[in-house]
Length: 528
View 1 (tube, rainbow, N blue to C red):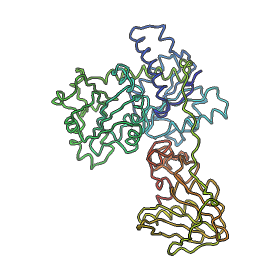
View 2: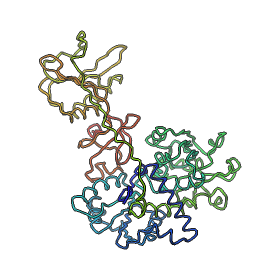
View 3: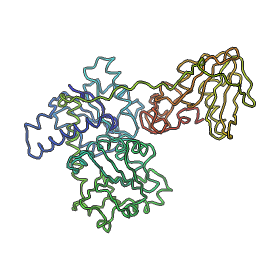
View 4: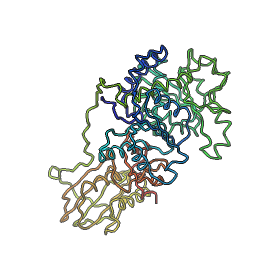
């Protein structure tokens, strides 16, 4: 069936750059066949199976995405179903997992899900894969994220990339793009942090007042990918630059989500990100404007008088959505893509973030005892905690470490030591018999990276470990994402255990919603 068969698209990075370019190549062929009404070519893309179930589950209002997918499904002559969110089981307190377990048992193969809950498709992909295996389902259900909260909108990103390529003469060499509007809430621009990697040289100009600025999580991703990123508070400030992007991508400001303080500045904020007629002469030749739509009918960031101008790229962009989604469905169904061979990246071995020191090779040094710390005969000493931090912060964090490692009931204590040049560090010491396994060491590495663990016996260090930040941390019930909209947050009551992966900035990003956390913030205990 090929590499695409049964795949889910939960975030844009679920498809590699190579795989997306393959999809775009077929979307280009399909679009041409539509324009010439070449039925022979069109039929090569049709699933043409009335028993193939495509289920739209839109738990958040949508017109364009929903109808685009509905028409794409009808093209395929497939069975199309729709969950009425107003009377659905979700309103009766049923979990996402149980609802989709039931629906997948009715020969539904692809679920298109739109929800305010972030990371829901990632969770369902994991949960339903296990469900299909244990129940012997013929096909594993696939999930397409049609927008989840302010996280991502990967199919919108696909049609956006296709349109950018179309206007780039299909070149992936360079892209200079201005992102204008509500970059804080706009999931379509968040998907671009990873999506624009299909272009080799990317410059992104972020145009938004501070209240609507791009979240740090996505800003970090762009810079990690080597994008050149410039920021501006308004269109007026941006147009004073000598180099202006030839492609502008506007989003609708969602000021209603931001409270009365922001609404008092509504007129000022809207003016900062709304294009005006007198600015047209300042644009580069052949500039194109794009918008995921809909525009606000009273306050459109791209005013309607521009509809009849050459700036209009948003209408064709919207039309391209159906072609891209038809091809995406055909790939997941296995209708096309059988000949595609993906160049999978090599599997990277887990790095050793827990390093045991070879005590036999150590050069004996004069024993130094920090002021206030008495040597222990048997037990553990955790040293170098938050080295270089302020004393109060170190004390608070040592309490968290003690709680996370369940050392609260033991004897001993904590101490803040001042080393050379007045640099502070924390020390936790616990006398007694302690057997810390790999699980404990992983927890300590996650909550106190840079620390050292000493296991003491008969007054001597028997084993010593140096700990750094783990690349991933999961399967601990006391982990928690701080984003209340995340599927793993306790307020969602879905029973999803939090998972995190380390970023290049040495933060922990939630595996479901992508929100970045410091290593002190991922523990539920730290919020009590």
